[in-house]
Image (cartoon, rainbow, N blue to C red):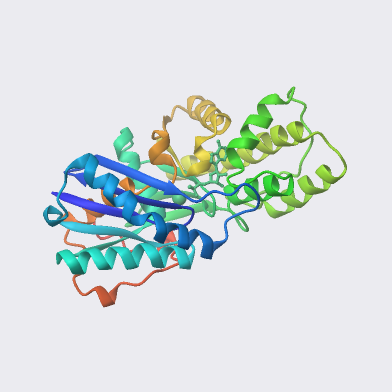
Length: 326
Ligand code: AMP
Ligand code: MG
């Protein structure tokens, strides 16, 4: 069985191919800026412009003939509407041309399901990405959100602060480098865990004020990571305790951060849980995970041939998805 996946929820246009549960292609082209954040219409234009080239690369590398595909999977949400529309349009065009069914995939759940590649079987996932920050686990027939940000996603939070400090998009990798330059000079920041949830906008304001007050940027980057990652790890640990699960899986672009990985490892070691973290190309937004979950769904008969029935769902919530493939 061969399926093609398309990812276009935010900054990344990705196309991947999965053959019998194995990833054979995972290509992408991401929208970046030198200054400022994502402009959704610009990102959508980027996706439209690079689509054919990325598809060509995938087909060249794998020697797969489009006609041999069994299905096309596409992430329909959550994400930026203009970007999602490009992915869905391209997916539908391919389905029509090739007369293949469409498999609509939830982006967040794809991040979790791809964790199976690392050996995780029934994990609590700390999903820390640009727009999304959630602690998710499968329980009683659904992927449930045990904790989440009450305002902005942790990646957007870091990017917003970085932008304020004159750094382009994405800011996360730069903040990580600056933090390493700090002599671990911790500057106290608000710590906002509310039950299982976290709040970030107040910390963002506080950081900006401190930058205005000429605090050292390296120290602020260091303190940002220490504070906010501790909040993430605390809520993930609560979810482990609550669900009784013994595995923690990291996902999302912010999970590329070595300090966050380290803090998760320490927590897991202390409570006897196993820690799983996919390789970088599967942590960030990618289409292999869309094809991967697409195949699982397709094998259970979840597919649509009437293309008019599928639309984008920019605000689709993880716990709204009917999980009929498990
Ligand atoms: P995603 O939406 O899952 O693709 O993740 C994108 C987000 O990950 C952006 O907000 C990036 O700034 C962030 N990010 C990427 N690498 C790092 C890193 N090393 N440390 C912190 N954040 C990162
Ligand atoms: Mg993502």
